[in-house]
Image (tube, helix red, strand yellow):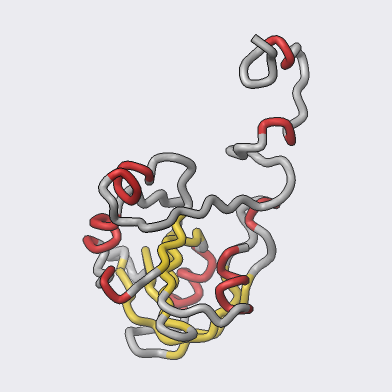
Length: 168
């Protein structure tokens, strides 16, 4: 959802950390991709419905991390106007900017950090003053992990007896 909007709105200096896409990483490994190669493929959109649809990203491979067995375990893709997409084989929650820096990203080049985390990021991005503004973004509809608890279907539970649905 966010990646699609970054591209559609031609935003600049955004880091997307991360999108889980082992299929894209495997395709890069099969193609023998290397740093500096062009990147043009659909990414994301297959984990579950809340991931949205795959998004076409055109850019340049900034970095590939080898898994030591001929595969690719992570990739950084430069795209658009100074943007960076971080691809990983699993779901990742960055909890502070230093973790992104440790993964080889010069965080001073970016003005917007789009990370996937419900609350774990607050100490590392908010409490220390790193983030001037925080926007919480969530896809529509019910899904595991939503903060919109009223969007979920409850069975075998009188939900109105419990916080935050109860009057007490």
